[in-house]
Length: 412
Image (cartoon, rainbow, N blue to C red):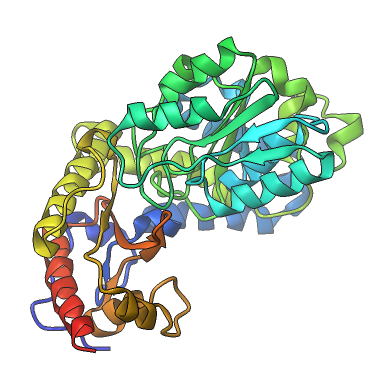
């Protein structure tokens, strides 16, 4: 497919990724994107696995898992002994919730901006126990972190057993004040399950400093490791009651040379765990992109997201929906509203996405970016990501395309 005229160039770092050069890719936040060097390292691990499966699964994979865990522990400031790998943050959330042994009448608080898949698992686990799921609505737009914190605290009762909260919200891309919330939950004897799906490589994280009961995250998003790599942190005093969702050979016998907690999670049956091993390579690669290391990459990406939001707000003539202090490498912008009848017609257009405008932006302008509806009023919004391969010209191009398509919608 030919690219439109005046198609924007990505950053100089885009050469390290295998992204389609004919697409303006502004949606790293949904599935991530893995650099070529990391994919090549994963391929080398696979070659070792296929060369001798017995040697691999019995001996070779364990030192490599430990190496990846140590690299990850340094990045998120956690003892590697308290970390295990899982396929994704949703699996981590489900594993943590399944260990709580909920009783009838218990309550679990989870704000409405929690990831839908995590809420699905929460409702299933709570439903089996007869527990209640409480989903307070976070304001969107929001005035700031204080408002978010108060909404969550107001939802807590004497029956609240745990709070499931995103560190970075998926729909709106906001960094929530978990560093203030977790200590308050601990004082009240309430279990904290922090869904940090976006966090590693997105904002600085100290799990030691936060000291949650559980913290889970994806590595394939902002760390840029291969798809299917996530982490679960479990505080030491809870590890004895946490089991994988699938039990394998080590569930009863353990492993003669490994802690039981890690032995169970490190091997849950025959599978390709090379994505986990690639976490080590991804951290090394991303940390080499800029002279200041991974911290400089995160600072660069955040600054780009902040400027991208300004560009889009100016283009569409709208106000920013949240303070800049709540931004990381994602930014969501509410779009101008159409009159109700026109909006209803636009919403009825067929699309595999939430809104057919996403198809128009891709098919006509070759822009890959999510267009969603969220909140009580189901206001339409657009969420952009900022990764090392992006450049400000791409968001300026998106701004011009949005102005064009919004005007076209007004003529429908």
